[in-house]
Length: 252
Image (cartoon, rainbow, N blue to C red):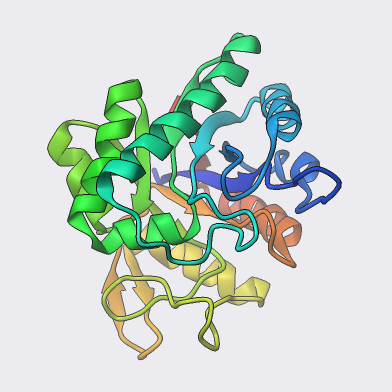
């Protein structure tokens, strides 16, 4: 029987600015990656998002990003591994405090945006992130792009990992995500998205932009909470997976 975790990046509102539809998205996913104030989010938003996740029985994850509110953490910053270690430690600790106040635990850590993509290819950066997660709690699960350095370095340290695939992103031949700056980086057609998800789960492959199938491991599927069709995608993907007999659950 196939089994999959559905995750979404949430808690990305900030002050008077609302991003995404966290309340509704949480009805369709099993794990929430909650922004920790560096690329998005603030203490009030973090508290509310943690509470909403707990109410919906959704597992909590820290979503640490680069210190770049203006760029939403999607701009590359030349960050040293030692600095990456510290900012991940800081952000995971912040979410743990809000989780403790709700008498629940944090399940996982998933880096955000540019930090995630940079660490996918940079062994030293990936190792620093993995070491930070391990230092906070070696029982935490590190989410990383399937086949990436994040997964490799985390497993080398003895961390549990979840290989992540994406419902609404296209892939390059090397297994990396198509940069958002390029055409066709995002999938906006629901049927195309669902077809890609089913192939990744059942066949362990995804069609790259050059038309070739590449191998992927799918432990968890991400549906971005700030996408134009995030709610529709999450709803339809969840419903389709159930119809296909695929078990949807977190790693808790």
